[in-house]
Length: 302
Image (cartoon, rainbow, N blue to C red):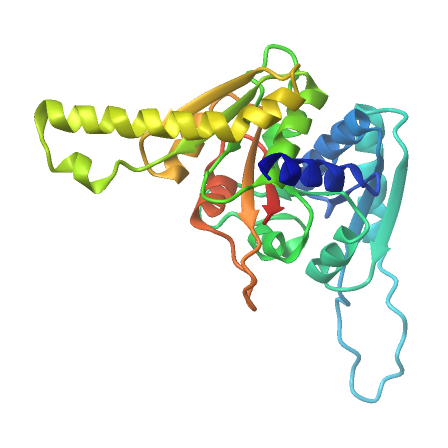
């Protein structure tokens, strides 16, 4: 059954639109995102779509005739992004979209015609905001494709001498789409994949004291390693050229994942479809997109 589910996830991921969309707004962070997306487009042999969106800057005065607003700055933003991309990744096919509607709505619509959505991050901490004037956390739970958030200093991932990419594995849900994305990403870059699992010690481990407590902690860690190994086994068999490093950290998943991402070129985290009327993300994803030391890919999965 597990193998059948894995094959279904791989087949679904193989049906692509062959388009990567990046939102640009003229900031250095958006240009960094465009450069990262261009590199990814070359690796995937995909088209790159540069999108900028805006709302009317002024309201129509009472009684005044309506005139169509045609601002000049969207063209300038797109051309700057195009020049940046062509300098970094010459020759990749580029499409442009100038959309006169709220940026969040434009990006949600664009996600329906793309395989990957890339945005620029404006910084660390709880006040971090993302490209086009909307928070990335507003967008992420509203789309059904992976979203990558890139900070200005992480515009282009290194592929030589890198410790590879990292993926957070919860083991509480199948997460086949997440693992498919992670293994495909590592294979595409020809870098190792670090599978990170964080788990709190069970309550009984704190009640024994001394050697008994250490033994309980070791037993819990051994069980976590076995479960992680079993979850990865079918994917390692399919992607035999990907070197996998398993890392189990006996602490809360969020800090464990951030520690595991150190030195990597991309952190991949999963977001489950929860069927809520108001879309939300979990605290692990929230921590990753605000504090990870590298670009973060948020992958929706069942």
